Every structure is written in structure tokens, then in C-alpha cells.
Length: 183
Image 1 (cartoon, helix red, strand yellow):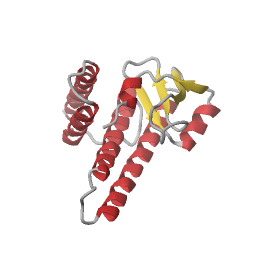
Image 2 (spheres, rainbow, N blue to C red; image 1 turned 135 degrees about the vertical axis):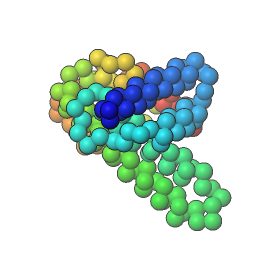
Image 3 (tube, rainbow, N blue to C red; image 1 turned 45 degrees about the vertical axis):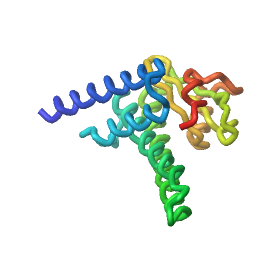
Image 4 (cartoon, rainbow, N blue to C red; image 1 turned 120 degrees about the vertical axis):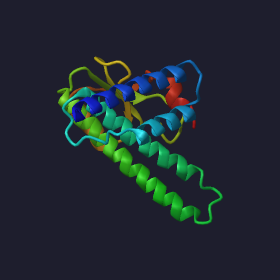
């Protein structure tokens, strides 16, 4: 019975994720709304991150879970301008953000290893953000729809290069409009 409930929660999560992506692509919601709705879906999900990644779905779920947490804390840090304890609170939120991004990168690597690096392409992306230029790269799982990951992690980059799946040079992102939209 528990396995059935988890499967239904998985199906609900992935249907909602696809629906949000479609709404964003149709300009029905902004990037910020997309991120907020995704965070709410993760927060309200009965599924928590998986320790063992033994399926594409578990790996994608973990990526989404940690990425939504990181973006949530980054947003909180940005909104603290008028807080009494601005510096302390901003650092606290940015540390949480970095922690969740690190867990996201670990989950990404576990998923890629589960797939034995098959159908994986990675490359630096062209970006409007000066702070991301030459740092942000995209990882596309070519055998799956809507499986596009991003990272700035040096250790993950080295793993991708060592596996021979990293294409040198800058490329246009598969979701260029999304990554270049500020939130």
C-alpha cells in the first residue's frame, strides 16, 4: 500500500512539473511564479529525497527537490534588503542555498552514474548574467523529455569531462529564455 501511495505521489509530482513547464513556456506564468509553484509542490509532497538513486524518476525528483530549496533560500536572501539583521540573515540564507545546491549536484552525479553516462551531454551555456558567464553549464539527458540540469560545480564538471560527455566551448542553452530570465 505504501508503494502505491508513493507511486501516485510520484505521478502527481511529475504531472504537475510538466504542467508548470508548459505554463511557463506558454507565458502563462513568470519564472518567479514557476519557481514558487514548484517549491510549493515539493514542500507539500509526501516524498522526501532518496538516498539511493536507482531510477531516473528518483534522480530527477532529488534534483528538483534540492534545486527548489536552493532557489527558495536565494530568493529569501535577495528580499532581505530592509531587514534589521540584514547581513546575518542574508548569510544564513545563502549558506542554506549553497548547501542545497551541493546536494543537488550530488544527486545529479548519482543519476548520471545510474545511467552509466549514456545519453548525457554537457556544455557551458551562453548567459546574460555576468556572474554566471564561464561558470554555468547545462547537462542534458537526451533520452528523456524535460531532463535539463544546470550547475556551476567544479567537481561535477571534472567528473563530466573525465567521462567524456562534456563538450568544450559555449553553446546555446536548450532553455535559454528560462535561464536568462531574472527572478
